[in-house]
Amino acid sequence: MLYQQFQNIKINTKSKIKLLAHAVSYAFLMLFASHAAQANSEQASYKIEVIVFESLALKGWTEEYWPEEIEHPIIENSTPLSSKDKPPLWLSLQDRDMNDNAAKLSKRGYRVLFHQAWSQLAPSNSNAPTVMIENESQYGTTMLGTVRLYKTRFAHVDFDLEFDRRIPDKILNQFLEKQNLANTIVSNNMDSSNVPQNWAFHLSDSRKIKPGELHYIDHPLFGILVQISTLN
Image (cartoon, rainbow, N blue to C red; front, side, top):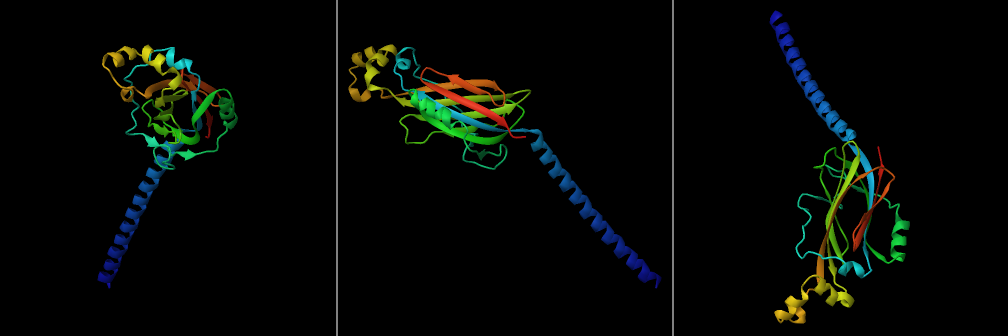
């Protein structure tokens, strides 16, 4: 009888230990989930809208010297804008609020190359992940680059974009002279097939930005409009 009671005590004790172990494991799991959720909640969440456009005026081609070698955006570790609802930025496409701005640009001699709005987390350091953006292939000018949105004391947005654009026929000779290429082509007896038809450009800028502010980033041949709004 005593032996049976002793065995029952041992079984009950083992059961309690197992239950306790499961309870501890569950508590640690919930604690980890809570910390992860808290970390995300501590990061600001914004909606960001970006319009990238090009000027159709010809003077920007010949008023400045444009280097033949440019810096290229680092896109290897960027998150494509199409990668929705995934960490670490939790991107999600949003409705655009700046359609009127895009329409005005088109009426004033500009061509919109990219217009998109999305929401994302804004990490609290300048090494935050970048979002890769690019325009559709139907445009004559191709654009590829990155957008970085982060928040320290204030929100900041960084752009690093590369453009490949066809040189307009009307100013081709002027452009080649400005680039000191005309004499090189003549002296080397280069035929027309070796004359550059496209030129690459680089646009890089960083701005401190407040919700609701519309920022314009200028360039002789291109431009960017950007606006953010707070989601949490």
